[in-house]
Image 1 (cartoon, rainbow, N blue to C red):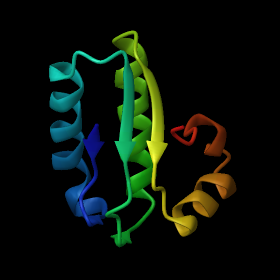
Image 2: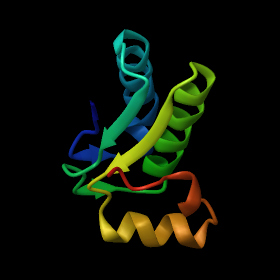
Image 3: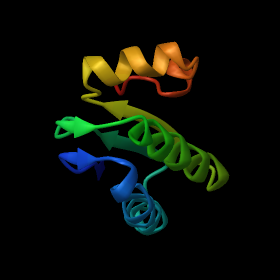
Length: 90
């Protein structure tokens, strides 16, 4: 499972992407779950990070889902028209 930090804004996005991409490559699982439950302070960059993580997972032949997405970020994903790209983990 990939775990997002408590704070994910524009200034943290690039470093977070690198961390998550490394985690993706090192995880032998075919089903990737990103845990967003710790996210407390974020902006739209959090969506960009999640979408980048999804793209990397799919490129590696893995599935991608999100656990614990904060309601405010789910609403933002809906406004941007990308909510369906971030399925809720079972």
